[in-house]
Amino acid sequence: MMACCTLCTTVAAQDDTSVINTELNAGVELYRWQEFDDSGTRLLTESGPRLFFLAAINNTDRPRNGFIYEATLKGYTGNVDYDGQDNNNIFISSKSMYSGFAIDLNGGVRIADKFDMDVLAGIGINVWRREIKDDQNAQGSLVSGITEDYDIQYLTLAIGLPQRYANADGYLKVGLKRPYSTREDVDNFNVTLSPGKKVSGIISYKLIFDANSNNLISSIMFYYDGFRFSKSQDEVTLINNVPNQVRQPKSSQDVIGVAIGHLF
Figure 1 (cartoon, one colour):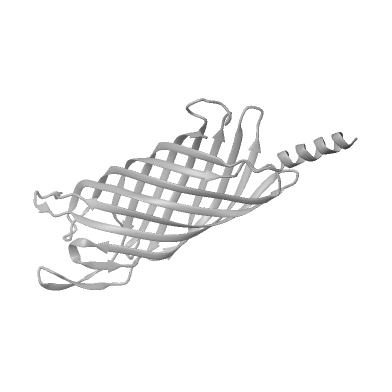
Figure 2 (figure 1 turned 180 degrees about the vertical axis):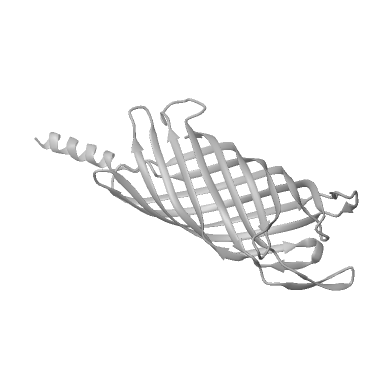
């Protein structure tokens, strides 16, 4: 009887042990950046694919109620198409080079009943460089490029819904994101701007195959992410020794991606 009770206690303790996953992911994302004037007319669009690498640690396989967490580090780069206009409103088509990284820390609680649900809150930072290349406008005149460095810090609130299938596990996450600090350094004009902070949405779905196998690919993830910024305050700077007002127009960023990963 004592042995039986001891065995039951041991099994229960093992069942309640949270599984800590380490993941490495790589993939491609379709990127779009748009800017608009005060009337809502689109000023420019950047779009194209970017490659990324993502490392994560989490315990989303936890079988019972309790603390849930995830930490991710993402690096990305890509050369996308730029379709916009110069300072004289003349069309120009060029290229923009993006490179950057993002760090996200999320934590919350799992409520396990008839179905599991996670309530999550997080904090993150996304830092990137945007290099618009020199090119000719529609009239054949050379237009100089520009380099901008962004530092966006934000908060997130999300719901996570784990699913258990016969040969795989799924995880759906839906939430909102809002910056609390925005910084944009425009190197060419030696000016720092602060785009306005607005709420955007996030959604992802991950399908995890046999995590205990030695298969090279053990997960696939689809996601949408983005930012929304209202226009910044004007800043005065010297351009060719002439004072000018510089601002970041109303802007939006949309990213749709797919990643394949391996769990350790």
